[in-house]
Length: 375
Image (cartoon, rainbow, N blue to C red):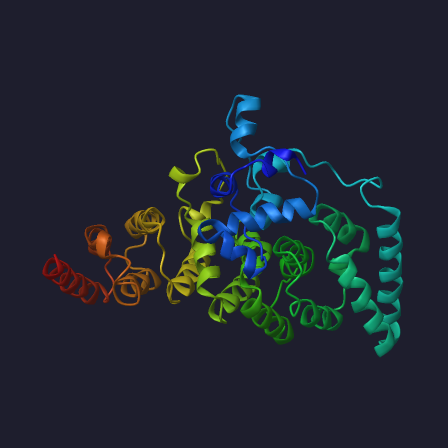
């Protein structure tokens, strides 16, 4: 590792680390040292473990003399990696996957075939043991390994056994979970053309409760942001996961990515699908599921951006009942969060022609009086 980080005073670490935004699990004892920016520390430690410490975002901009821009491709959504890192990645080659990894992949592929034919318990145990070595590889090598293993072809029953095993471990990097969910469940869900199986929905609901944020970045966001249209089968998967017990932190990550505050990330330029701007029935259903959960967003610009988009959509769909229900959720379940945006919510509610309009406006008046009395 470069001596640059060794020479930094302790108080400067947070400033350096805050330039990175990915979230990774890390030992609580280390988090205690860096209370104010443990999330960025997690990202930094991930990069140290992979021996891929690169210049910071600020340094990169100085070197290149221009702002970095990237499209909304798989890597951006699924892991949140900065574009400077994305542009330095190359296509998978044999040189990247070490001989040891190739041998491990061959063993796993052979075990996979045996399990598919005979489903012996001894083979499954060996498969889990070998896979636990694979899932701990640096995430770039892990991606290449999954491609060679063709893990998307794995049987649903074996996938369930595999998931039940790896979600119990706390020493697997967050980003590796994201890659795993992307190469397994994302590929499977995208191919669904009819009602999702009960077993699949059950597996996903269980995983989302323990690994919610990786599911958000490895499955939900790619399904929402990388699709021109969200079909009914995929919609059912998305809403089932959201309603099935996602943590508040995971819900906040989801809504933050859907309605980003560009003022805090000026270098980002993305191509957003039409349904994120002019909401269709599927997107409205997703938003209803999100706001039917309890969460508190500290960044009010994100909340303001959502209300702005809600207002625009009510102009075109004033009688949409689900939009009316979202308004009602804002003034009831999220009343504390909208106290600084009552006028904007009222302006949006005025455009609604649903039977809920009267109730929403009445609640807004009550909240306005409460706010004045608190001043």
